[in-house]
Amino acid sequence: MAETTTPTATPIGALELPLPALGMLSDAHRRGSRCAWCSTPLTAETAVDAGERDAEDGARIFPRGCADCAGRAAYRLLWEHATACDRCRTDASCPVAVAAQRLMRRGR
Ligand SMILES: [Zn+2]
Ligand SMILES: [Zn+2]
Image 1: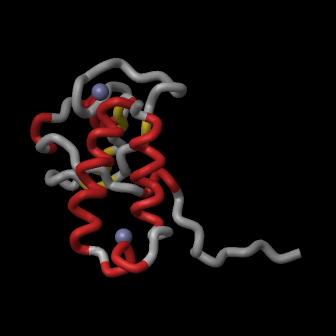
Image 2: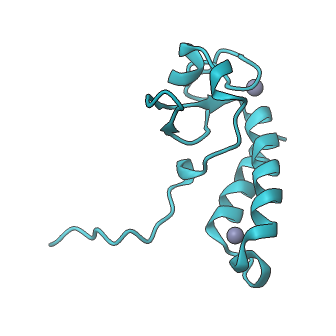
Image 3: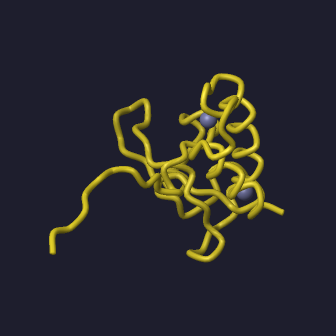
């Protein structure tokens, strides 16, 4: 049995949520051990992936947030995304919108 490698699934953690300025983020924020927005210490249960990305200084960062902050950031991302996304205009199942809405629900 061959393994399927078709890259069709959108991983939930792939959403790059809008973060505070990267220069404001400490090592703990960059590693994802504290909420990138409010600095609350995070556990595996409370942490929400905010989207792995490259920082301005070239380092790979793994920011995470608490459910409240990530929910707010997801709302902002969805707002900005939906105005620019052709798929969202015609199709409610745009993977970005679906993933953002999932995060917004967690924040309640
Ligand atoms: Zn927070
Ligand atoms: Zn979309």
